[in-house]
Image (cartoon, rainbow, N blue to C red):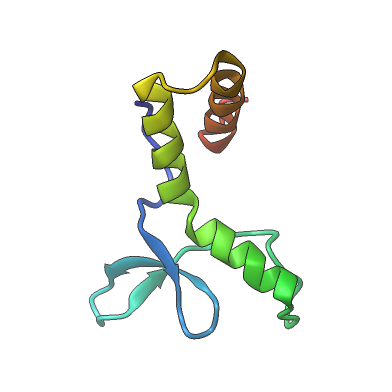
Length: 93
C-alpha cells in the first residue's frame, strides 16, 4: 500500500467547520489542517459544509479504497478507477 505523505488522519471538523487533525498541539488544541479551495472567504454555505465533510473524511476514504484494491475483490474496471483515484490522491498523476 502506498503511503499518503500529507497530514495523517483521522481528520475531523471543529465547532467552526474547520478541518482539524486529531493530534493536539502543546496547548491542547487540535491542529488545523490547511485546505485550499474549499470555500469562499467569510461565506459558509451548505456546499462549503459538504465540501469540508468530504475533505475531513479523505484519509479514511483513501485507506479504505487501498484496502479494497489490495483485497482484489473489485471488478477489473473498478480496479482501474480505484488506481486512478489513489494516484490522484497521492499526487502521482
